[in-house]
Amino acid sequence: MTGGRTFGYVNVPSMVAGADGRTRRQYVTRQIVPAEAAIVRQIFERYAVGLGQKGIARLLHEEGAVAPRPQQKRPAVSRVRTRSTC
Image (tube, rainbow, N blue to C red; front, side):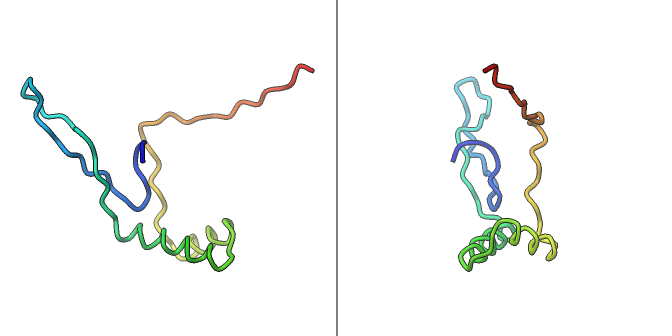
């Protein structure tokens, strides 16, 4: 999976020394975060028995489940509405 962080996993960088002697990240592997993985399993189990997104979100909120952390480095994206000129 490309991109940044995925809920339920943590990125573990694999470092390698370059020709210039500096260490750089070659790639990352994903390692399961048990507490977050349990929440992901709950979401899929609840969906499988027929709950919808709002119902699942409400139950998770009531249970105090941890939420995905917002990405700090990305700027906020705003939606722009466009009008048709026709």
